[in-house]
Structure formats: C-alpha cells, structure tokens
Length: 374
Ligand SMILES: C[S@@+](CC[C@H](N)C(=O)[O-])C[C@H]1O[C@@H](n2cnc3c(N)ncnc32)[C@H](O)[C@@H]1O
Ligand SMILES: [Zn+2]
Image (cartoon, rainbow, N blue to C red; front, side, top):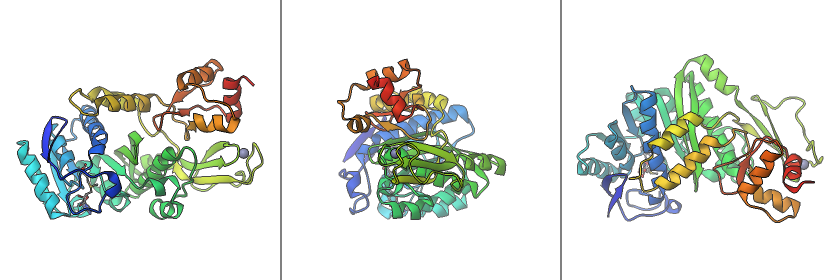
C-alpha cells in the first residue's frame, strides 16, 4: 500500500505492529514509529545547522527505506543498507518514486560501515543495537542515531539478558523507562570509548516500547575519559523507594548495603549506568523548532521535545501515582503537584517518560512534606 509521511510517498507492505517485528515475510514497516522518524528528520535539520559539514547519512537497516528517503528529501547524501533482498529492492523503488538520489546496497551494515565513513549513522535494528555499535562508533564522523526496542532487558525486567547485552546490571524499578535509557547510554558511551571517541547524548527519548538516542561524536581519549566519569551506580530501596547515586565504575567501599532511610535489606544496586544528562536542552529546543506542520506526528513531537528540553537531569524520575499509593492518599493533578514542590523551594519538572513522571532533587520525605504538608 502507498503511504504518505512527512511529504514523501512510499510503497510499504501491509502494516504490522512492533509486537510482530521480525516474524513476517514482508519487508518490515511499523507505522507507529512515525513519531520516531519525524523527530529524526527534525534532528537532521537541527544538526546540519550545528555542523554544516554533516552531509552523508547511512540508513543502516533500511527495510522500506523510509528513513533514507526522508533524509534524502532533506538534502542528505544517503546510503541505505539491508541484508534482505526484498528490502533493498523496495528501498531503491521508494527513492526513485520520490525522484531522489541515493545508494542502496544489499549488505550487512557492519561491513558497510567498515568500508566507508559516514557523517551520520542511523541504527534501527530489531531489538538490541549492540551488535552494530562498534562499527558505528569506529566509523561515523559526527552523529550516531540509535533505536533499541529490547526494553525488557534494558530496564531490568529481563535482567540476565540486560547484563549479557549491555555489560551493566539494570534493575526493575518504577522508573524503568529511564533505567532502560541509561543502561543503553552506558553501553554506547563505553563502546565509543574503545575507539577513543566521546559519544555525548544530545537528544534522547523513551516512547511507547522503544528507546531512541542521538549521540554526537568527539575524538580524543581525554574527552572519552570525561564521559566514562559520568557512569555510576543507583541505589534503590524497594520498600521506601529511597534512591541515591554515586559516580564510578565500581561501587565505593562505603556504599550502603541496607537502605539508609528505612533499614530495609531490599536495596537494589544498578550500574554502571549513565548518570549524565540524556539530552542537551538547547539542541532539543532547536529540534523542536525544526518540527513542521506537515509532519504527521508534529503535535506529539513538539510536546515530547518540550518536555525533554525542560526536564531536570537527575539520574532517576519519580512516579507521582506510585508515591501516592505508598502514602495511601488520592493523587492530585500533576501541575498542582509540581507547584507545591516549587512553592516549598524545590526544583521540579515533569518528565517525558509518562504522564505522572516528574523530576526533582528533593527526597521522598521532602516531597511528602511539600505536597501533603506533613
Ligand atoms: C526494524 S527494521 C528497520 C525499519 C526501518 N528503519 C524503518 O524505519 O521502517 C530492521 C531491518 O534490519 C534489517 N537487517 C537485519 N540485520 C541487518 C544487518 N546486519 N545489516 C543491515 N540490515 C539488517 C532487516 O532485514 C530489517 O529490514
Ligand atoms: Zn528504604
């Protein structure tokens, strides 16, 4: 069937959702990833203003080629790769259908990346991007865009798988989308560091069942070391929801082994995860400005980017409903809730992860005192 997206028209197979990824015979196409693709196009626009020399774009797992076609429509010099012959044919046809130039190759993207350098590399695999991360960070010049759909391993719900894939211990908490993002960023930052490359996240979001992040590359061992210093551990009490963090690649000798607040022995340790900022607010604002009304997900993209640009960069968010459940009180509206925190002198913002997610450096007793007045 024909589909219009962001001003281009492509032929795609009958749609199937993320749940059936990789199981059908048709070339993959997921209409619910339009938000991801709209934000990607806006990132490509904003990034070119920041780095005008960024010209070449590798759509590493092209499938229908929709990302490559949209990047080519933005003036990028596009290469699409896919291992599947039908995908390669379709991506080629879709570039032609839109009168756009671009190379399309039936090739594993790792080989393509080792054969030639690309300014921007976009990894959009089934599940984990880790098998492609080394080649990307070793060979991209400016920007690596990464989707991961294996959220259960990333957030600690399938912990053994997360440990194997990401070389870190994720823990399943009420801030699981952020745990997933920070586990992924930890692995990506460490992978880039192997090549003396600093990979800094300049825009990230967790939407629906995937994590998406954009990492800007900078050469040099010192720059890579500085990012390694932003890895560390989160301590989380399963009983009172206390959380704290510390930087380092090993937990310190005096790390708590029981909850410092309620003395519970159900204290989880997650790490080493990324504790630094997951986005650069000024860049995210530029991305937001680059969303245009012709995009099918413009309204959602703007709302998402507004939130990402303004949320505090504490390592974990709180879930307001979870706190009220803990307190045995009925929840109030989020805007009123944030106002109470600010009135009590705490920094506080909503967070993009879900409707009741918020960020504040305040502790849970401080939050409770601010909103319940106790
Ligand atoms: C999730 S789909 C990509 C979706 C597409 N980027 C989009 O936005 O609609 C993953 C694609 O990766 C392809 N693939 C799997 N292994 C690959 C590899 N090693 N190199 C390149 N492509 C690969 C699959 O054939 C499939 O078409
Ligand atoms: Zn506790």
